[in-house]
Length: 498
Image (cartoon, rainbow, N blue to C red; front, side, top):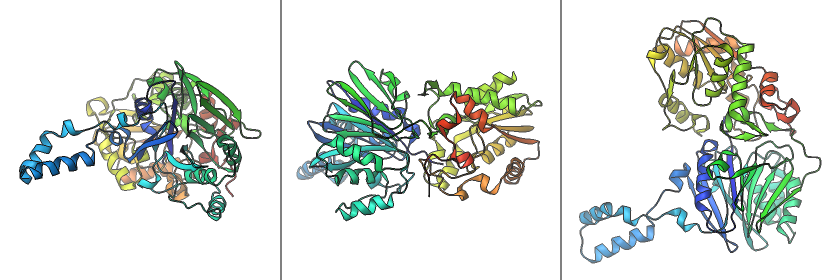
């Protein structure tokens, strides 16, 4: 399962925004590790830096190619040997480095971290994506998936637009580029109702930053302020690191515009409602310190763990452990309700490894799982454990965890999962488009999952499995079922897929 991205936008009254954009994106690295980018506007001209990899790698200091070539030529002209030239360059590489962020000067910017849910993992698909409107540049960052795009793609092609990428985000760029409207906001108001699916957008045009959310509110988008600065972000944790105050959510079907130190909000959609918020944001995707709809996600996940104990107690267990880090809050909730001791160090998690969940290649994902966890035998040996995790998707993690704990001489394991079984694909921002990618397609019952774990690991001790019900999952959020997209659990999607 792959989450689709994180978007960021900032408008400041004075100064430069590149550093703020960098730290905002860094806070949302968990939403995408494949690529990152920032686009800034300076007097209507756009300047960008985009790259494959994590935020810190993409924006690391670099030696400009022209500077490197100049040094080599100068040394060659002085008759310096190749060996001595290489030695000189190695010795002086620190002084030759330049900061990428210092080159991105401007008062407004948008940024993006990506994991591909549509479109291949390639340089051409890195966002923010830039386009032209009436001879002026604009840029778009997109979180979510559009559906039913083929007709729109064909229509834009007939109008002369040539697509350069395989991502659905370019549909938005193409529609804006082929619009006959003269005003950018008017063109956007014409384009947005044509889009179907999930989209939270950060848009940059001349001296304005725009945030847009689809009419169902499928993907989160919030905004905040700091001493005259306006920020939009996929998650509130990005506001926290910048010292900004959370203003609230961009409402479903709403557009928020920051210009000249002012904000303007308007609804572009007819009859919008919070009727499709991805419930997996609460279970896994968003950081536990982020706030969605007024709830800190740590507390929501802790409540899920508490309700999980009520539905699936483990009366023989002696210790609760988490599958870190995404299982931590649920484990503490389970322990709190059960009065059992709890630790997050039954399995030690290596933080040099990112989220294996959003790695694009299956083989890499499996390898990372081997590197990611390591049990501490002195803590778990000889015990019966409650092992709390957020979900079972492809069933890559649970066999590895079972194997590790078996090798640490754990006596028995009660797996407790604080989400319902994932039985159906997602088309709205998570890369599980086929049933064949889901463990529950082959292993439909808890007992079949248990037998699969035994077969994969050879574990002979007692194994049990319990999933939180959908009713309790929703109860923990403080909202009601009609607010959510629960399609991955019950095939109840907010957007018709046919």
